[in-house]
Each structure stands twice: as C-alpha cells, then as structure tokens.
Image 1 (cartoon, one colour):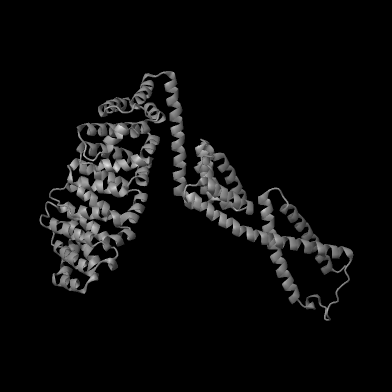
Image 2 (cartoon, helix red, strand yellow):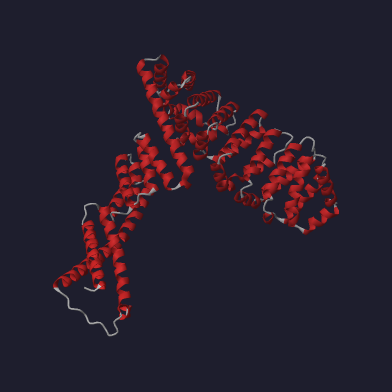
Length: 576
C-alpha cells in the first residue's frame, strides 16, 4: 500500500473513532455533555466542508501523476464506511438546525422571563426560564436567571443547584458564583459563601471592590448570627437585663396607649441598651417593628408641627435608635434599610424642632463613623433631601453647623457619594447655590468654609464641573460671595481663600468658562493681587491663569493694570 494511502486510512480510522465518541456523547443522559457534543459536531462539519472545497481545487501534481487519476475500485468496507460517515453528517446537520431553532425559542423565553422578573412575578419568571431550558439545556444565563428568581422566593437549595449547572456550562461564570455566594449566605453557610466570592476575584481581579463588599456582608452576617446565639444564651440563663429587655418590648407592643406611656417605656429600654447582648435582643424580639409600626408612635414621628408630647416621643425614639445601633452593624442595617425609617431620618433632620434636629444629626453622625454605616446612608437614604437638611444647619449655632458639615465631609469621602453627586446634581444645585448666597456675617465661618471646600473637591470631577458651569445661578452665587468677602477681607479672609480654591477647580477646563463670567472673575482676582496675604494672592493668580485666556479684552485690562510687574514682584518675593 502506498504511503499516502496508508496515511489516508489512518486518518479515516481516527475520524471514525472520534465520530463514534461524539455520537455516544450526543446520546448522553447529561444534557450539558450532549449539547457540547452537538457544538463539536458542528465544528467538525465546518472543517469537512473546507476540506472538501480544498480537495476539489487540488491537482494531481501533488502526487506526481500527470494524467487524470482513475477512481480506484471500492470494496464493501469502504462503501459501508462512507455510508456511515454520510449518515453521521446528516444527523449532525439536523441536530445543528434544531439547535439554532431552539436557540431562538430559548432567547424569547429568557426575555419573557426577564420581563416577569422585573415585575416581581418570580413564579412566572421561573416557569419561562424552565421552558427555555427544555429547548436549550446548556444556556447558562437561563440557569443563573432562574437561580436569582429562586433566591427572591427564598428557595436557596434550588438556586444552588442551578448555579452548579451554570458552572458546568461555563466554569468561569462569575454570575453563578455571585448567586451561589448569596444563597449560601442566606443558608448561613459562611465559609462556602466566602469561597464563592473569592472565586469571582480569581476569575476577574478587576472586581476587587465588589468582592470586598460581598465579603464584608458575609463577615457582618456571621457576626450578627454569633451575637444572636450569645444573646439567646443569656436570655435562657435568666439574666435580669436580658429578661427585662424582652418584657419591656412586650409591654411596648400594647396598642392604643397614650404617647407618654410609650415615651416612658422607650426611655427605660434605652437605659437597658448597655452592651451587645441587649442590643441584639432588641433586634431578635422585633424591637424595630414594635416601635415603627405602632400607630401612636408613628403619628408622633410624622406630625409636621410637633407639640411637647410629640416632641418627647420623637426624641425618645431617636435616642433609643442611637443606643441600639451603637457598635451593632446588623441593627444599623435594619434601621436604615427599612423603607419607612429610611424616609423618616432625613425628614426628622429637617425638623423645625431643635431637639429633634440635634438627635437626628447625632444618630446620623454615629452611623457615619464606619465605612459600613456610610455605605448604608448613601445607598438607602434620600441624599438630595439629606443634603438640603445639612446645608440648612449653616444658619444655626456654630456647634450644630460644624457637626452637620462633619457629617457631610464623612459622606463626601466615599466614592459612592461622588457617583450619586454627578448623577443627581441638577436636583441638588439649588441647595448648593444657596450655600454661596449666605451672608458670611451671620453664618459660622468655619462651617461655611468646610462646605465650600467640599464643593471644591466635588467640582474637580469633569462631569460635575460641566453641570455646575451650566447653572448660571451657581456662577452668579460665586461672584456674589466674592463681593461680600471683599467688603471686609480681614474678617472674611478664610471664606475668600476657600472660595478661590473652589473657583480654581471650576476653571480647570477654560473652554467651559463663559467670557462674561471669566471677565468678572478676572477683574476681582486682579484686585486681589494687591493683597498682602500670600495665600489669597497665590490662589487669585491661579484663577487668573485659567480665566485670562477666555477673553482678549481682559488680557488687555490685565496688562494695563500692571499684572506682569505684580507677578514678577510676587515671584521674587516667593524666591527670597
């Protein structure tokens, strides 16, 4: 047998073995193995088509035969083999066609399921995803979507099973690991949950921030679980404070009592919240709902113009929340994430009753002391309303104003706050412009400077800067505050210095600066170059360097005003 014939025979036998293996896999009971075999068969068919086209284009020169080759006689085995391959090819093509048709149907069912999921109809969503999987067994998104729907219904075991199937389809499916981690967390399988989230990081290191948040959730839930076990042990042991906490909550659950009855009980309960066990028992015995769902207490909390009794109830509730949330992240989560309480906190902060304002601010400051607490505030409270309430504190005493700005500073350090700020700036602009319109003579200087500094940092973001410049009101407010500070530079030196810092950031992109506004700012900064204060002079020069290019007229004015000589003098004094 010629060498080329021997090679062709070996190639044929190898193909037969591979095709036989594929046929076995296509008939496998495992749907994922079955679908992968179909995909591999499709690839082989494509290669066969390519080989056939190449064969048709070949000449006999490759075999050093000049005359047209004569077709050799075929024996029975060759005929049988060719018929076998033709049968396999036909079957594979039919399977590929059915797969394409099923893919279209599965995609349609996925979209239908997603629509039901978006409406909160999780049962229908599961039904659609399941029907889609009957059409296409290896469509991983149907498994992960169905797992998410099962999680919404609290069926965590089925969610885990679906995640396993998704990983059989794609071992690097991060979405499957995410849902699996969430299901394990709900089942209190903390180690398994961590492993799932860490696997996400191994697959995609760029998700480090998100994974850090997931792992933090696991740590907090595990810590809360341990606290609850310890608290229950104390209660079972008959410890006086634990029993008293439980009894007080039962007493407060009585409906239709006078407001002062609840206020008194809440004050006693607050005094009991001395350690972690009592705070945890408050949570495990439904303390938050007992307080928030009580009609009398709720009426006192929501009434706009509060009388003395309503004020007493409000203050007692706020002090209780401070006590139960102290060093207890799970209590903080339950307080802030509840929709009613989440809406209530900014409203109480904006109250016209000083004691309610003070206690609301104290509670929010307490929450903002930790990264977890700041995250809860930013993610679950109405930040526009909260910002409006905080800047309104600039009109109060220096102590209150500084406390409010300290809270705003803590929040502004978070990246999530910057994301919110850029997305929600149009709604917040009136409150921000109002900050700059305040009379520095009747506003806490330190608090006002702190607020302007926060605006300066936020305006360093290009997206925020564009929106601020789009507001004529904000630009005019900057000019107005500069004019007020010029009236008494000795008194308002700190405010002017901080304001110039804000304006330097605003002018980082000269192309955004309008010519009219730039001329006004430049004229004011030119006059500030005569200031004996090095800090003011330096920042005024910095603003000028970014505004002069906006107008040839202002450049000419600056030259006539001797700006070059002033800057040379300033540079010399800086050197020496």
